[in-house]
Image (cartoon, rainbow, N blue to C red; front, top):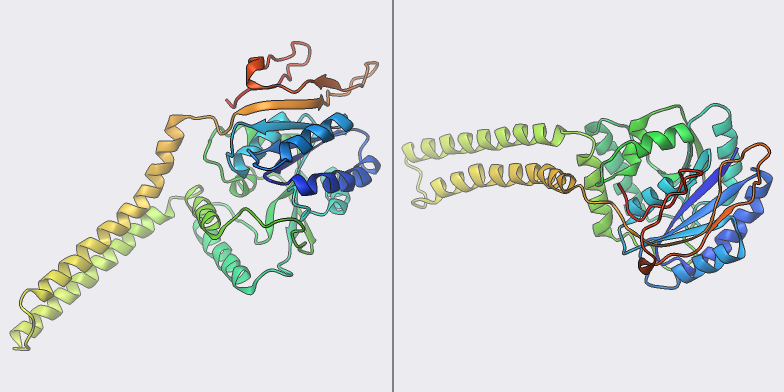
Length: 347
Protein backbone atom coordinates (compact mmCIF):
# COMPACT_ATOMS: atom_id res chain seq x y z
CA UNK A 1 0.00 0.00 0.00
CA UNK A 2 1.15 3.54 -0.73
CA UNK A 3 2.09 6.08 1.92
CA UNK A 4 1.95 9.87 1.80
CA UNK A 5 3.93 11.82 4.39
CA UNK A 6 2.59 15.34 5.00
CA UNK A 7 5.01 17.76 6.67
CA UNK A 8 3.95 21.36 7.44
CA UNK A 9 7.01 23.63 7.49
CA UNK A 10 7.53 27.11 8.88
CA UNK A 11 11.11 28.39 9.00
CA UNK A 12 12.54 24.85 9.05
CA UNK A 13 15.36 25.34 6.53
CA UNK A 14 18.07 23.98 8.81
CA UNK A 15 16.38 20.67 9.58
CA UNK A 16 14.82 19.61 6.27
CA UNK A 17 17.86 17.80 4.88
CA UNK A 18 18.33 15.87 8.12
CA UNK A 19 14.65 15.01 8.16
CA UNK A 20 14.89 13.72 4.59
CA UNK A 21 17.84 11.52 5.57
CA UNK A 22 15.87 10.07 8.49
CA UNK A 23 12.82 9.34 6.36
CA UNK A 24 14.83 7.82 3.51
CA UNK A 25 16.58 5.55 6.00
CA UNK A 26 13.28 4.20 7.33
CA UNK A 27 10.54 4.32 4.69
CA UNK A 28 12.02 2.16 1.87
CA UNK A 29 12.02 -0.85 4.20
CA UNK A 30 8.40 -0.27 5.23
CA UNK A 31 6.51 0.59 2.03
CA UNK A 32 7.08 -0.06 -1.65
CA UNK A 33 5.95 3.40 -2.74
CA UNK A 34 5.81 6.64 -0.83
CA UNK A 35 5.74 10.37 -1.33
CA UNK A 36 6.71 13.23 0.99
CA UNK A 37 4.66 16.44 0.71
CA UNK A 38 6.47 19.45 2.17
CA UNK A 39 4.10 22.36 2.82
CA UNK A 40 5.87 25.70 3.19
CA UNK A 41 3.60 27.86 5.34
CA UNK A 42 4.90 31.28 4.30
CA UNK A 43 8.39 30.81 5.74
CA UNK A 44 10.71 33.82 5.94
CA UNK A 45 13.95 31.84 5.73
CA UNK A 46 15.17 29.47 3.02
CA UNK A 47 12.62 26.73 3.65
CA UNK A 48 11.02 27.07 0.22
CA UNK A 49 14.39 26.99 -1.55
CA UNK A 50 15.37 23.88 0.40
CA UNK A 51 12.06 22.23 -0.47
CA UNK A 52 12.64 22.99 -4.15
CA UNK A 53 16.11 21.50 -3.93
CA UNK A 54 14.93 18.31 -2.24
CA UNK A 55 12.14 17.79 -4.77
CA UNK A 56 14.59 18.23 -7.64
CA UNK A 57 16.99 15.67 -6.16
CA UNK A 58 14.45 13.04 -5.14
CA UNK A 59 11.29 12.30 -7.19
CA UNK A 60 9.57 11.03 -4.05
CA UNK A 61 9.53 14.56 -2.64
CA UNK A 62 7.26 17.38 -3.71
CA UNK A 63 6.31 20.69 -2.18
CA UNK A 64 3.56 23.24 -1.83
CA UNK A 65 4.18 26.87 -0.97
CA UNK A 66 1.31 28.84 0.56
CA UNK A 67 0.81 32.48 -0.37
CA UNK A 68 1.42 33.57 3.24
CA UNK A 69 1.57 32.14 6.74
CA UNK A 70 -1.88 30.62 7.28
CA UNK A 71 -0.91 28.69 10.39
CA UNK A 72 -0.25 25.02 10.93
CA UNK A 73 -3.90 24.06 10.56
CA UNK A 74 -4.09 25.51 7.04
CA UNK A 75 -0.75 24.00 6.01
CA UNK A 76 -1.73 20.59 7.33
CA UNK A 77 -5.06 20.69 5.51
CA UNK A 78 -3.31 21.66 2.27
CA UNK A 79 -0.96 18.70 2.56
CA UNK A 80 -3.73 16.24 3.39
CA UNK A 81 -5.75 17.38 0.39
CA UNK A 82 -2.79 16.89 -1.91
CA UNK A 83 -1.81 13.47 -0.49
CA UNK A 84 -2.55 10.58 -2.85
CA UNK A 85 -1.49 7.58 -0.76
CA UNK A 86 -3.74 4.91 0.73
CA UNK A 87 -2.27 5.90 4.09
CA UNK A 88 -1.34 9.41 5.19
CA UNK A 89 1.26 10.16 7.84
CA UNK A 90 1.39 13.62 9.42
CA UNK A 91 4.53 14.78 11.20
CA UNK A 92 6.39 17.97 12.06
CA UNK A 93 9.57 19.18 10.37
CA UNK A 94 11.38 20.11 13.60
CA UNK A 95 12.83 16.59 14.14
CA UNK A 96 10.82 16.14 17.35
CA UNK A 97 8.78 13.35 15.76
CA UNK A 98 11.10 10.31 15.53
CA UNK A 99 11.05 8.61 12.14
CA UNK A 100 11.87 5.21 13.69
CA UNK A 101 8.40 5.21 15.30
CA UNK A 102 6.72 5.03 11.89
CA UNK A 103 7.29 1.28 11.65
CA UNK A 104 5.24 0.58 14.78
CA UNK A 105 2.55 3.01 13.68
CA UNK A 106 2.13 1.41 10.25
CA UNK A 107 2.07 -2.06 11.79
CA UNK A 108 -0.83 -1.09 14.03
CA UNK A 109 -2.65 0.64 11.16
CA UNK A 110 -2.37 -2.46 8.99
CA UNK A 111 -3.76 -4.60 11.83
CA UNK A 112 -7.18 -3.00 11.39
CA UNK A 113 -6.98 0.49 12.89
CA UNK A 114 -7.92 3.64 10.99
CA UNK A 115 -5.86 5.99 13.14
CA UNK A 116 -2.61 5.42 14.96
CA UNK A 117 -1.44 8.36 17.06
CA UNK A 118 1.89 8.93 18.77
CA UNK A 119 1.71 10.07 22.40
CA UNK A 120 4.78 11.78 23.82
CA UNK A 121 5.69 12.01 27.48
CA UNK A 122 6.68 15.25 29.20
CA UNK A 123 10.36 14.44 29.58
CA UNK A 124 12.53 17.56 29.43
CA UNK A 125 9.56 19.94 29.41
CA UNK A 126 9.32 22.79 31.96
CA UNK A 127 7.26 21.72 34.98
CA UNK A 128 4.99 24.74 34.80
CA UNK A 129 4.09 24.01 31.18
CA UNK A 130 3.48 20.33 31.97
CA UNK A 131 1.20 21.25 34.85
CA UNK A 132 -0.76 23.78 32.80
CA UNK A 133 -1.11 21.26 29.98
CA UNK A 134 -2.48 18.59 32.30
CA UNK A 135 -4.94 21.03 33.85
CA UNK A 136 -6.05 22.16 30.40
CA UNK A 137 -6.77 18.64 29.18
CA UNK A 138 -8.68 17.84 32.38
CA UNK A 139 -10.78 20.96 31.89
CA UNK A 140 -11.38 20.60 28.16
CA UNK A 141 -12.39 16.95 28.52
CA UNK A 142 -15.00 18.01 31.06
CA UNK A 143 -16.43 20.56 28.63
CA UNK A 144 -15.87 19.26 25.11
CA UNK A 145 -17.94 16.68 23.28
CA UNK A 146 -14.76 14.79 22.35
CA UNK A 147 -11.99 13.41 24.53
CA UNK A 148 -8.48 14.78 23.97
CA UNK A 149 -5.48 12.91 25.32
CA UNK A 150 -2.57 14.74 26.91
CA UNK A 151 0.61 14.33 24.87
CA UNK A 152 -1.20 13.43 21.64
CA UNK A 153 -0.63 15.91 18.84
CA UNK A 154 -0.63 15.80 15.06
CA UNK A 155 1.96 13.00 14.72
CA UNK A 156 -0.28 10.22 13.43
CA UNK A 157 -1.00 7.97 10.48
CA UNK A 158 -4.48 7.70 8.96
CA UNK A 159 -6.20 5.25 6.66
CA UNK A 160 -7.73 6.62 3.49
CA UNK A 161 -11.16 6.21 5.09
CA UNK A 162 -10.17 8.44 8.01
CA UNK A 163 -8.58 10.98 5.64
CA UNK A 164 -11.76 11.18 3.56
CA UNK A 165 -13.76 11.76 6.74
CA UNK A 166 -11.46 14.63 7.72
CA UNK A 167 -11.75 16.20 4.28
CA UNK A 168 -15.55 15.88 4.33
CA UNK A 169 -15.73 18.61 6.99
CA UNK A 170 -15.76 21.99 5.22
CA UNK A 171 -15.14 24.22 8.24
CA UNK A 172 -12.29 26.69 7.81
CA UNK A 173 -11.64 27.53 11.47
CA UNK A 174 -10.20 24.12 12.26
CA UNK A 175 -8.98 22.48 15.46
CA UNK A 176 -7.51 19.27 14.09
CA UNK A 177 -6.88 17.58 17.44
CA UNK A 178 -10.60 17.69 18.07
CA UNK A 179 -11.52 16.79 14.49
CA UNK A 180 -9.32 13.68 14.59
CA UNK A 181 -11.13 12.58 17.74
CA UNK A 182 -14.56 13.60 16.43
CA UNK A 183 -14.44 11.48 13.26
CA UNK A 184 -13.90 8.42 15.41
CA UNK A 185 -12.87 5.09 13.87
CA UNK A 186 -10.72 2.53 15.66
CA UNK A 187 -7.67 4.30 17.09
CA UNK A 188 -4.44 2.98 18.58
CA UNK A 189 -1.75 4.85 20.50
CA UNK A 190 2.04 4.48 20.42
CA UNK A 191 3.98 6.12 23.28
CA UNK A 192 7.40 7.69 22.82
CA UNK A 193 9.85 9.79 24.79
CA UNK A 194 9.78 13.52 24.20
CA UNK A 195 12.51 14.76 21.86
CA UNK A 196 14.02 18.20 22.40
CA UNK A 197 13.85 20.59 19.46
CA UNK A 198 17.21 20.60 17.71
CA UNK A 199 17.14 23.81 15.66
CA UNK A 200 15.81 27.26 16.55
CA UNK A 201 12.86 27.76 18.89
CA UNK A 202 9.23 26.77 18.65
CA UNK A 203 7.03 29.31 16.84
CA UNK A 204 4.23 28.63 19.34
CA UNK A 205 4.38 31.48 21.85
CA UNK A 206 2.37 31.55 25.07
CA UNK A 207 -0.26 33.74 23.40
CA UNK A 208 -0.66 31.33 20.48
CA UNK A 209 -0.96 28.38 22.84
CA UNK A 210 -3.67 30.17 24.83
CA UNK A 211 -5.62 31.00 21.65
CA UNK A 212 -5.20 27.43 20.45
CA UNK A 213 -6.54 26.19 23.76
CA UNK A 214 -9.58 28.45 23.51
CA UNK A 215 -10.24 27.08 20.02
CA UNK A 216 -10.24 23.59 21.49
CA UNK A 217 -12.87 24.51 24.07
CA UNK A 218 -15.16 26.51 21.78
CA UNK A 219 -14.97 24.35 18.65
CA UNK A 220 -16.59 21.23 20.06
CA UNK A 221 -19.24 22.23 22.54
CA UNK A 222 -21.67 24.91 23.69
CA UNK A 223 -21.25 24.24 27.40
CA UNK A 224 -19.50 27.57 28.08
CA UNK A 225 -22.71 29.30 26.97
CA UNK A 226 -24.69 27.31 29.53
CA UNK A 227 -21.97 27.88 32.13
CA UNK A 228 -22.21 31.61 31.46
CA UNK A 229 -25.90 31.47 32.29
CA UNK A 230 -25.18 29.70 35.56
CA UNK A 231 -22.34 32.03 36.46
CA UNK A 232 -24.37 35.09 35.54
CA UNK A 233 -27.16 33.81 37.76
CA UNK A 234 -24.71 33.28 40.58
CA UNK A 235 -23.30 36.81 40.26
CA UNK A 236 -26.82 38.22 40.23
CA UNK A 237 -27.70 36.22 43.35
CA UNK A 238 -24.59 37.43 45.15
CA UNK A 239 -25.43 41.01 44.19
CA UNK A 240 -28.94 40.52 45.56
CA UNK A 241 -27.58 39.09 48.81
CA UNK A 242 -25.18 42.02 49.08
CA UNK A 243 -28.05 44.44 48.51
CA UNK A 244 -30.03 42.81 51.31
CA UNK A 245 -26.96 43.08 53.56
CA UNK A 246 -26.63 46.79 52.78
CA UNK A 247 -30.30 47.41 53.53
CA UNK A 248 -30.06 45.53 56.84
CA UNK A 249 -26.95 47.51 57.82
CA UNK A 250 -28.70 50.78 56.95
CA UNK A 251 -31.80 49.89 59.00
CA UNK A 252 -29.59 48.85 61.91
CA UNK A 253 -27.98 52.26 61.95
CA UNK A 254 -24.46 51.27 60.85
CA UNK A 255 -22.67 54.23 59.24
CA UNK A 256 -21.77 54.08 55.55
CA UNK A 257 -20.67 56.26 52.67
CA UNK A 258 -23.77 57.68 50.98
CA UNK A 259 -24.32 56.12 47.59
CA UNK A 260 -21.29 53.82 47.78
CA UNK A 261 -23.19 50.65 48.57
CA UNK A 262 -25.72 51.15 45.81
CA UNK A 263 -22.99 51.87 43.31
CA UNK A 264 -21.00 48.76 44.25
CA UNK A 265 -24.06 46.55 44.03
CA UNK A 266 -24.83 47.84 40.55
CA UNK A 267 -21.27 47.52 39.27
CA UNK A 268 -20.55 44.06 40.67
CA UNK A 269 -23.94 42.63 39.80
CA UNK A 270 -24.80 43.93 36.38
CA UNK A 271 -21.38 44.93 35.07
CA UNK A 272 -19.67 41.64 35.91
CA UNK A 273 -22.52 39.53 34.60
CA UNK A 274 -22.82 41.42 31.32
CA UNK A 275 -19.11 41.47 30.57
CA UNK A 276 -18.77 37.77 31.26
CA UNK A 277 -21.74 36.82 29.13
CA UNK A 278 -20.62 39.16 26.36
CA UNK A 279 -17.16 37.57 26.28
CA UNK A 280 -18.46 34.01 26.09
CA UNK A 281 -21.08 34.78 23.47
CA UNK A 282 -18.50 36.80 21.54
CA UNK A 283 -16.27 33.75 21.17
CA UNK A 284 -19.06 31.83 19.48
CA UNK A 285 -20.32 34.73 17.41
CA UNK A 286 -16.79 35.42 16.19
CA UNK A 287 -16.44 31.89 14.92
CA UNK A 288 -19.85 32.01 13.24
CA UNK A 289 -18.78 35.25 11.58
CA UNK A 290 -15.56 33.71 10.25
CA UNK A 291 -17.31 30.58 9.00
CA UNK A 292 -20.05 32.61 7.29
CA UNK A 293 -17.46 34.34 5.12
CA UNK A 294 -16.56 30.95 3.66
CA UNK A 295 -12.99 32.01 3.00
CA UNK A 296 -10.55 29.35 1.80
CA UNK A 297 -8.24 28.23 4.62
CA UNK A 298 -5.18 28.75 2.39
CA UNK A 299 -3.94 29.65 -1.10
CA UNK A 300 -1.16 27.84 -2.94
CA UNK A 301 1.22 30.15 -4.78
CA UNK A 302 3.62 27.48 -6.03
CA UNK A 303 3.93 23.72 -6.20
CA UNK A 304 6.42 21.32 -7.67
CA UNK A 305 7.76 17.79 -7.62
CA UNK A 306 6.38 14.37 -8.52
CA UNK A 307 2.82 13.25 -7.90
CA UNK A 308 2.56 9.61 -6.84
CA UNK A 309 -0.22 8.22 -9.03
CA UNK A 310 -2.22 5.17 -7.91
CA UNK A 311 -0.49 1.94 -8.90
CA UNK A 312 -2.19 -0.03 -11.69
CA UNK A 313 -1.40 -3.44 -13.06
CA UNK A 314 0.39 -3.38 -16.38
CA UNK A 315 0.92 0.38 -16.27
CA UNK A 316 4.03 2.44 -16.01
CA UNK A 317 4.58 3.23 -12.32
CA UNK A 318 6.87 6.15 -13.00
CA UNK A 319 5.73 9.29 -11.15
CA UNK A 320 4.13 12.15 -13.03
CA UNK A 321 6.27 15.27 -12.79
CA UNK A 322 4.69 18.67 -12.18
CA UNK A 323 6.99 21.60 -12.76
CA UNK A 324 7.09 24.41 -10.17
CA UNK A 325 4.31 26.91 -10.64
CA UNK A 326 4.04 30.58 -9.76
CA UNK A 327 1.13 33.03 -9.89
CA UNK A 328 1.99 34.06 -13.44
CA UNK A 329 1.51 30.49 -14.64
CA UNK A 330 -2.27 30.70 -14.25
CA UNK A 331 -4.56 28.20 -12.48
CA UNK A 332 -3.71 24.54 -12.21
CA UNK A 333 -5.89 22.27 -14.34
CA UNK A 334 -6.91 18.78 -13.28
CA UNK A 335 -5.46 15.92 -15.27
CA UNK A 336 -8.44 14.31 -17.03
CA UNK A 337 -6.72 10.95 -16.92
CA UNK A 338 -6.48 10.81 -13.14
CA UNK A 339 -8.83 13.49 -11.80
CA UNK A 340 -6.07 14.31 -9.36
CA UNK A 341 -4.77 17.62 -10.65
CA UNK A 342 -3.42 20.37 -8.47
CA UNK A 343 -5.65 22.97 -6.95
CA UNK A 344 -4.76 26.62 -6.74
CA UNK A 345 -6.95 27.34 -3.73
CA UNK A 346 -9.11 25.51 -1.26
CA UNK A 347 -12.76 24.81 -1.83
